[in-house]
Every structure is written in C-alpha cells, then in structure tokens.
Length: 340
Image (tube, rainbow, N blue to C red):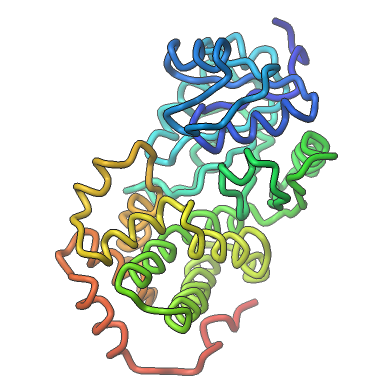
C-alpha cells in the first residue's frame, strides 16, 4: 500500500470510530478502519457489523477493517484517532513507530489523561513525530450518526491544512464540520461535558425535573469555562458546538453512556456494578479522576466536579451531593464567564 492509497484511516473500532468510518465510506471516501482484534476486523469485513459497539447497525459494505496498523498508516495521509483516553497513550506509542512527519493527525477522544493532566493532542505530540495535529469534537452520538441524522462538529488545529483537509473529507455528508483554531478549548469542552453529564444523569435518576437539569447544565458550563480558561482555552469556544452543543446532547440523551451511568447512580446502584455491566468506556469517570485533583492543585472552585468525584470515589450518596451543592453560597451568576 502506498501513501494516498486511502483518503483516511480511522484508528479505533469502538462505536464512534466505526460511525465516523461509516460516514466517510458512505461518502465514497477510501476509508480503512484499524481495530486491535483480528476477529473484529473479520466481522466488519465479512458480516458488515460491529455488534459489540453498535448492535443492530449495518455497516457499509465498502468499509474495510484491518489489524495491521503499520501498513494502514503507510497508506493514509490523514488519521482520525478514535480511542478512549485511558488507552490513548498506548495507541499513540504504536502510531509513533509508523507515523511520518507529514501525516495529519486528528483525534476525537473526549478525555484528559489521569496523573499527567495532558490533553490528547499533547499526548500525540509527545509520542509521535507528527506536527500537524487537530481535534474533532461536538454533539455526535454514534447511533444517531449511524442513522444518518444531521449533526455538527468542530475541527480545531493551529494548522489550517488540518482544518481544511478534515472539512473536505466530510463535505457533502450529514456531519457538518466547522473550523476553528482553539485546540485547548475544543478538547476541554469534549472532555469536561462528560462530568456534567454524569451529574445530569444523577438528577434524572433521583426524579428531578427540567428546572434541575437546566441549573446543572448552566452552572456546569460555567465550571467548564473556568477550568478551560485556566488551562489556556478561549472562553468563546464554549458557546459553540464543542462546548454548550456537546453539553446539551450528552446531558439530555438516553444514548449518552455518561448520562446512563449517572442515572443509575441516582437510582442507588453501585458504580462498580454499573461499569461492569457496560461494554463501552465511560469517559466521564476517568475525566473526573483527572480534573478534580488538577482543579484542587490549581485552587479552582468547581463544585459540580467535586460533587461528582464525591459520588464516584468518596462514598457520597446522591442526596449528600445535592445537599452539599445547595448549601453553597450564591454569588453573581456570570462571574465565572468574565474572561478574555
């Protein structure tokens, strides 16, 4: 396989990676999907399904999968990296062995690395020789993408070529890709909203209504902005698809894994039992483990994040979390949004 044999390689055969690869394949793009397990590649190639991650969904017959990463990378000028944050560095190391400096790398992972507090673009920069790196993020629930529902996302990069090539890749389809340059804000929005979605699910599980959900989403957006600006984001990014757009979808949809986990917590189920029953990674749990200690170290007041951390890892009941949040003093509503 020679360079430009493909239009894109999607790295990661989970729900979202498969949905993106399916979108591109339906547009006639020469797309290959890399998966770890040979039996998963065989299922996609022979039966045109990915039952573990997208049960009941038929994949395009033109979509092909492989577990040979080096050969696939060699044939593609642009890579869409769609693996969970907890596995991201390991896959980035594998990519580092075969990626060349002129490759374009765009990741779609919505998480922050535990311990290092690194964003996924930083991990790619550390583990590969690629310079032209970007992030694609927005309100993109995989089953809805598979169903062909109209959707939007933002691709952000310091390199205009990355933005334009990614937009051209998806042009003409049901996923409208808007451009931007704020990599930090786009990554923070995609990761942080999962924490708020856990809280939103808890509220639903406890039987609260739309007033409560609106309060959580709005104050969660304020915490997203406070954290994001502290790590270098442009506050205006959080008013777009990668911020409030993704937050709305993830907090409201029954398709959201983070919302599902929160709802079951709100009904009194234990976290370990919930996670053991789910085939997918729940990014909000890992992201809470990353953001909460970072916020403490930076002396950032993020009370919803603290409450979610308390429920997940400190033995708080959902009712404890609600009572602690409601007991906090009330300040000016938009104080946390008054940034550059």
